[in-house]
Amino acid sequence: MQGVLGLDQGLDGPGNRREYIGGRYSERRYSGRRCIRDAGRRTATIDKHLPLTEPTYYILLALTEPLHGYAIMQEVEQLSGGAVSVGPGTLYGALSTLEGDGLIVKVAEAERRKSYALTALGRRVLLSQIARLQVMAKRGGEVAGRLKATGTK
Image (cartoon, rainbow, N blue to C red; front, top):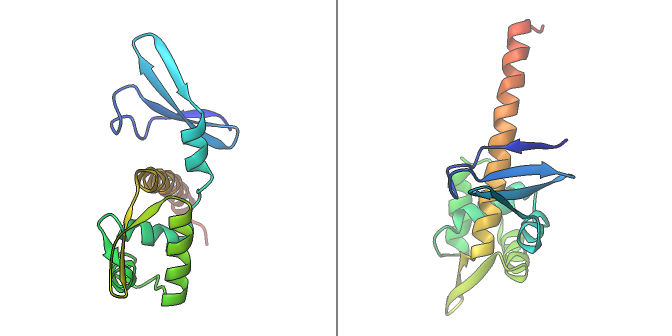
């Protein structure tokens, strides 16, 4: 499936688009008459982290501001409306992986409390996941509307 998605046109400038080509998203930037395609390392780096698991998504969402482990667990539960809760073992395993992948960074360490925050790459990955979820919700809403209209029993 190949096509242009205009969902993020206002995010990084007018005329910019993301295309779904060969099973991955690629950015196109339009400058006057020239089209510059960014299908290189930056896009590939983001794509290798997607899709995010639900706990990882909520951990990154919680880390839009620096937090320590226990605060991350509380924020994940609050953001998910109680649908996702992560225990200490799961959380610290995920934090270690995310830090190793360059999506988060340790910003402070006092006694036993380590605080983490998103990196620039982590922000881009999170924004890409949010865009993916928006597309899924939009398409799901369209299908749900058709199903309701046909009066499925």
